[in-house]
Each structure stands twice: as C-alpha cells, then as structure tokens.
Image 1 (cartoon, rainbow, N blue to C red):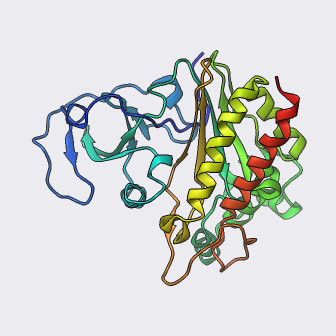
Image 2 (image 1 turned 90 degrees about the vertical axis):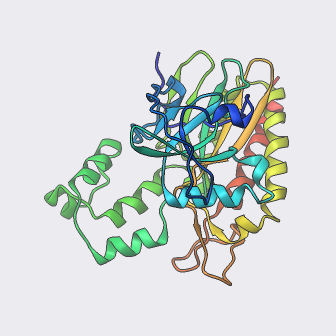
Length: 322
C-alpha cells in the first residue's frame, strides 16, 4: 500500500556531488550564479515521501537527493547548520535547484542506505506554533470554519457553545487546543506518524497523550527489538550532547521540527533533525536553554525537555524487550 504518513524523508548521499547536480539548475547556498538550466521532468515522489498536508512539497531527486519546496527561512537554517556542530545530525544541504519553474531546497535522502526501512516522525517541543503566529492571529481575529471542522473531527465535544453556534473557531484557540490533545504538552514530543517495514502506515496519534500510550506505540514501532532501541538511544544521547553546546541551537527558536527515526532488519538505526520551516533566529543577545517552561514572550520551545523525556521513555521500555 502507498504510505501517506506524515514523514519527512531525508538522507545519506550515495554519489559524488558533481554527479548529483547534473541536469538541474543549481544555485550554491548564498550565491546567485547558476549552471546552464536543463529542463528535467519532476519525478513522482516515492511512497515514503508522501507527506500529509504537504502535497507537492517533496519530490525525489537524482543520486540520493530529495527536493523540498523552497522557503527562504529553511534555506537559511540549513546553510547555518552546515557550518554548525549539528551538521552530522541534519540532512546534508546542497543548495537550491529549479525544476518546472519552481525552486526547491536540495538535500540528502536519509533512507538511501537502508533496506526496506521502518520510519517514525516525532515532533519535538512543547508547541508547534511560533509566538508571532499567536500575535498575528490576535491582531486579525477571524473565526475559521475549516479549523472548527478539524476540531470536531477529532473531538465533537471540544467546541464551546458559542463556537458551535458560529460553526467556527479562532486560529489562536485552535492552535492551543490542538497541542493539549497529544503528548506535546505532557512530554514535549509527539509521534506524528509511523511506517513499518512492511508498508503498513499509522498516523492516528493525535490523541496519544499518556506516557503509557506513547511507550506502547514505541514498542510496537521497534518490534520489541532491544538492539534497535539501544541504537536509537546512543544516537539521541549523542545528539543531546551536541545540542547543549551548539551555537545554532542556542540562538534559534526551534518550533515544529521533527526527529526522523529510521531502522531496518539488519539492526541499522539512524536519527536526524528535520523540518526547519518554523525555526527562526532570536534577536541578539537573547538565547534559549530549550528546557525552561514556555511563557508567552520568553520564546522557549521545550525542545531539550522533550528530548530528555523521549530518551527516558525509550530507556524505560528496554527491560520489556528482547
């Protein structure tokens, strides 16, 4: 079956860079020059590239590359990350390519060296909206019917009597309500989607909230394989050490970013930080510790608090695995 799970697939390159860049209009990060453009048709994304709510945002590139629809903010983050200590923990970035008159950020496909991998996307942090999104929504309070419909699809009892009468909710109300449903608020991370090695997909984690429910979902994902969990834990602990000293991390509000987990039947594992569309630099000299509870105005995102809890949960399930 085709997987439309909310997974962002990035990865390890398998060909030399000069080969990867043939047949596309290519811009080095920060440059304006391009190679002579050659029209190359877009490839249909592989099933693991399908992203819920992001139709058309991803395309399979050549030679182990993945193309993601261009945004300037993500480009700037990826450029900075290529020069930061976090570089081993993010997809390699190779500039901007243009295909079918659309710009894409080109990065490594993280699944290239895995054989029929299982994949999990975990959204990290205590909120998935920027403070500026709340401010803008308050400045232009407009009841949204589409957000009301999304709310009642998940919980018909969630809207207030006034919201039910209007058949609409304000964006600020919807954004903050959405975070209370899952383990985002209770643990600082939530499972967005899982694709098993056999192709079975599950994105039904919107109301997976308690620690016990999360532990059960993670056990099911790893197939009760202790070797895979140990591999993930090694990688996550290495990531945590680097995050605590990273200049990029200290000076950015990291919101809506995910950790991509990948493993296969050989026991090979990998974890990478992905999706920096809502990662924004802080005004100097402000810095974050990413563990302090969020209060509007302090810009804290709870990323490290969520990572701490994720490591603790995986550690706790180890005794129950084989």
